[in-house]
Length: 340
Ligand SMILES: NC(=O)c1ccc[n+]([C@@H]2O[C@H](COP(=O)([O-])OP(=O)(O)OC[C@H]3O[C@@H](n4cnc5c(N)ncnc54)[C@H](O)[C@@H]3O)[C@@H](O)[C@H]2O)c1
Ligand SMILES: [Zn+2]
Image 1 (cartoon, rainbow, N blue to C red):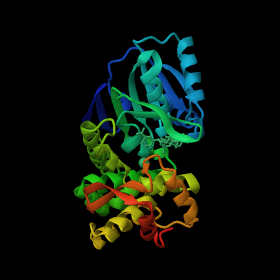
Image 2 (image 1 turned 45 degrees about the vertical axis):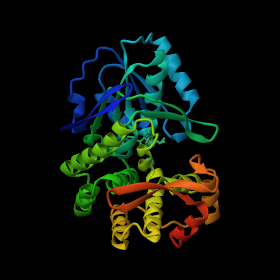
Image 3 (image 1 turned 120 degrees about the horizontal axis):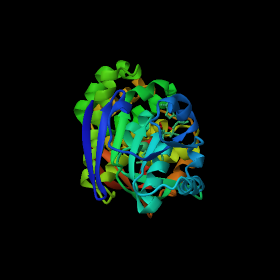
């Protein structure tokens, strides 16, 4: 087991990465568990003996209606400030449970148990808790660090393959923006990673989280540096919105475009851009996309982070050396080339 910490304005978050973490003793007497139907089906029998609030699955239920239903249940259960909220599930459950824990009674203590690879390396950690409203993703939310985050590798065994691959997109992202050694480790061990080898996974998740945690420690509320976590996400979000690609798949293509753009502007060496593409491909992620370019550019023009006809874009000088530059949207066409 490995541990690390995030120090946010609302307190410290202790993160554990390992196997069978359900046996780890967290000092709590009263708690309510929030989970979804699928995770409850797989693991409900192993949950600690607390009341369980089960929600449906899917991005569509990540909204204020679900949050209100949970508040009402907490009222019925007479939950007071001595209770912990435990969120067990993927990014959707972590976002909802984190939002509820941050707002009910102006904030309860919380434990997140992210159960997808994506949520273990990303959504479950960092204290950003948001829900969707009126077609906008994560538009209502708060920053608040959970007290504990347990990244239990044994939960990943029941994940569908496509979900595992999607999670790798965020690990590649963390390596590309923050750790050239992690990138090389992933290149060397991609086969074991695809088979969820315990030691390789513990190493990958831990080092990926070290990068995210250190960025969050320096810029919790995304005033500056935290933006580099959006590497691959400008196109990623637009692709996710307009195609059937999952978040990770969309970000994978987004990272290929961002690398290509970095190369075209003369920052990233061609061989490093190729390494990124090759690694994504080896991790069974898409590096090309069949879609209408125009629809994707329309979505980019609606991006919240746009500034007139320019957009803040995360680029690379080398693997592990990111920076942010404002790019005219017109200049992106060239980078996309034959990728879409
Ligand atoms: N707050 C943040 O910083 C942040 C960061 C990244 C992503 N997110 C959010 O995370 C969400 C995506 O998260 P996700 O990819 O984990 O999706 P998800 O939560 O929808 O989970 C995907 C599916 O896997 C199932 N599942 C979960 N754990 C499982 C397990 N161990 N075995 C079998 N099935 C399991 C779920 O029931 C669900 O059907 C999005 O809403 C995104 O906005 C938030
Ligand atoms: Zn992402």
